[in-house]
Length: 125
Image (cartoon, rainbow, N blue to C red; front, side):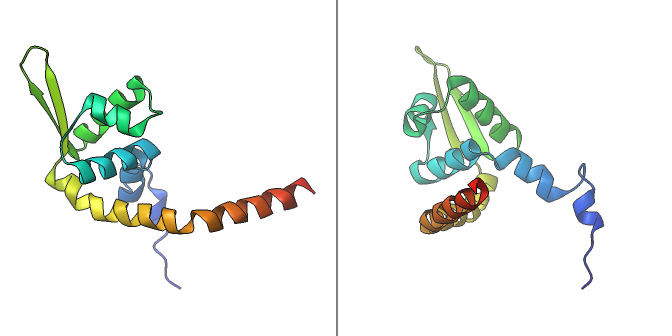
């Protein structure tokens, strides 16, 4: 078997490491999926939909997704100010892949939880 080991070793130039380090956290995946379903949302609507995310974490995650070009932040100079978020073309291109992962998680969660319980039980002995 011929495996190009080098492509996994260069942590600074590995596309998989680079991308997963930014979108691999639960909040990024949930926000991208949420915007994919809802379209355009305001900050408060995203926070309310996710429930247990802190304002600081939501702000940080939205900024990272915007910096990577996955979401667009549109500020409207109104009183009171209004800011909306939506997926960019790049974000919409990523969406089917994250949706597939989300679907897989929903389909397999019970099995994974059973395996975790078995593993934990064996570790406790």
